[in-house]
Length: 257
Image 1: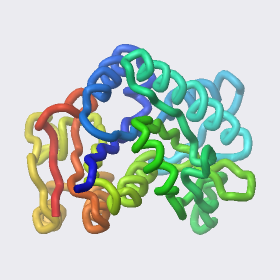
Image 2 (image 1 turned 180 degrees about the horizontal axis):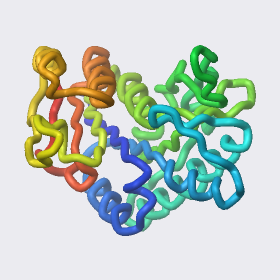
Image 3 (image 1 turned 90 degrees about the horizontal axis):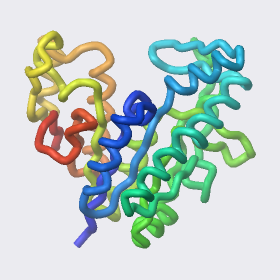
Image 4 (image 1 turned 90 degrees about the vertical axis):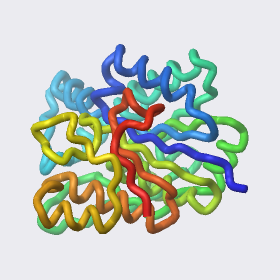
C-alpha cells in the first residue's frame, strides 16, 4: 500500500506576510503523512530588486529574468523566503529541509528557448529526482522547494512554482498516493467571479470543458486547470484549489479523474 503524500503550492503573498505565514505553517504542520511545500516569493523579489535599482519586468504574470534579476530571485527565493519557512516549520516540530532544484540535484531544467519572447534565465523542467525526494520523505524530512532549478551546467534558472509543484506531484505519483493542493486567492474555482461564495465544489474533465464553452471558466484559470487535469492523467489522485487557510478543510474545488 502506497503512503499518502500531500504537495502544497503556496504563493508569495502568503509566505511573505508574517501573520498569514504563521497560520499556513501551523495548518501545514498538522497534515498527516508525507508532505512537500512549494513556495513563491515574487513580491519580495520585486521589492528588493527596486531597492537595488533593478527594474522588474513582467509579461502575462511571468517574470522576465535577466542576469541581475536572477541574482535577486536566487537570494530571495532560495534564501530569505525559503529559510523563513524552514525556521517556522522547525519551531512547529517539523524537520524541514529548504531546497532549490540544484540542491541534491532535485530538479533539472533547460533554459526556455527564445520564441516570441525572451524570458531570460527561466527554466522548463526536464527531470525531477524521485529517488532523492523519496529518500527524504521516508526519513520524515519535509522538503520545502524554492522556485529555482538548475540546468546541470552550473546555471540556476528561475522556474514557475505552480509548474514545480505539478511536476513534482506527477513524478512521485508512482510511489505515493499524491494529493496536489494549489493555494489560491479565492475559495476555489468560482461559478461567478464576482461572488466569492460561488465555489464549484467538484469539476470533472467533462465539467471543465462545458464550463469553458459556456464562459464560466475563462482567462488564466483555463491553463491552471489544464495542468491540473494533466497531473490527474499522469497519476496524481486529486487536485484541490482552495485558500491557504483551508488546506485542512473540505472547502475549495476538487478535481478527480
